[in-house]
Image (cartoon, rainbow, N blue to C red):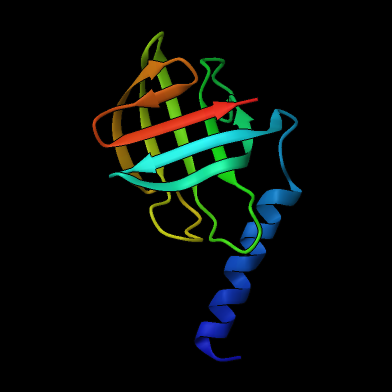
Length: 121
């Protein structure tokens, strides 16, 4: 296999593996991810509650629409109305390596001047 084809197979395997080993706390829902004014997730999604197993309400949202790129975001809750957000930043990236910054809660959403991450069951 050529290098780019091999890389595609490895990345695809990692993505499929992440969905086949989904934790019990995963639920289908509706999500919204807006970063710098652009909407990356809007509609059906998977919500992984307490993905850090810290009991603090942290969660992750994952896009599940077919035919579109794979985006996801994580909200790491540190207090009643305080959290830090991360997202993968580019289609199909497998790590939440891009920081969204400090987030404040607004109902089902966590937001700041740059980003909005929402999850509804």
